[in-house]
Image (cartoon, rainbow over all chains, first blue to last red; front, side):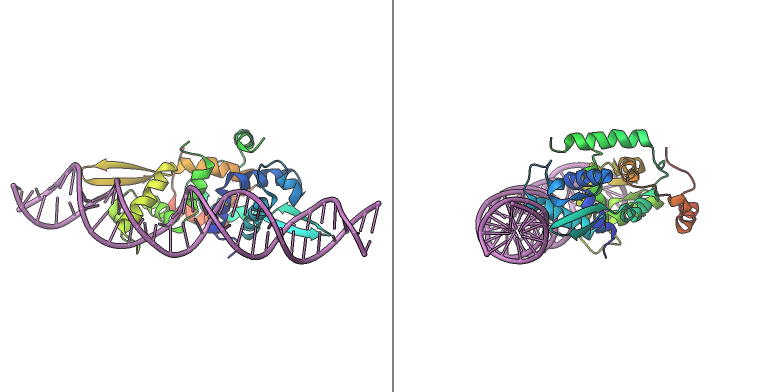
Length: 110
Length: 110
DNA sequence: GGGATCGTCAACCAAATGGTTGAATGTCTA
DNA sequence: TAGACATTCAACCATTTGGTTGACGATCCC
């Protein structure tokens, strides 16, 4: 199944893929543009995007020769709900989120 | 770092480990008792528990010859907060989850 | 002390993961 | 039509992962 916890958590376990998701939070992007900040091949990024797609975390739509990547945030809901079962983590603590987003982006390639 | 998103999400990506966490939601357990319902060796479960421990999701304490495993739900907070940044998941609005919370979780962890 | 129990360690294995490179496919544009 | 561009495919490689088995160090109890 596309949105199984297995595939979602596995997809989220990689820092490159989490960085990609954060980038897509800003705007939809073409594959080449997603790959630009990373120091790895386009093929590697293409694979990461496939994993994110199979997990349902993003959707890809081809327009002409450009394939656009777009966040599918709802796919995280299953995983989020599962985790909520272990404690009531405050929903949307923006300060904390921004701190983590920054540390995540710091570890992403410069 | 113990609570890095890498190690937490990777730990959560395995169904055996998620099942272990759910079991520990009920009560603290000895390693042998954790292993009992699974059709794999004790050594395999021991490895899973080590991965959960390194992720900070559980704590293990040895008393005599018995090693007790105990849930550390706070470790999930980082991951939960990170995910919240991608959408306002409101699990308390989900009826099924509310029922789950009422029956399984009387108190919210700090 | 000696045997049962609890749990880990060490060595091993198959499969999955994350990366590479080079060729291939499809599409836009001069 | 010929390139140039966007993306994936295929083959390959090293490392990690998830499992096994058997030996081992503690610990409890008779």
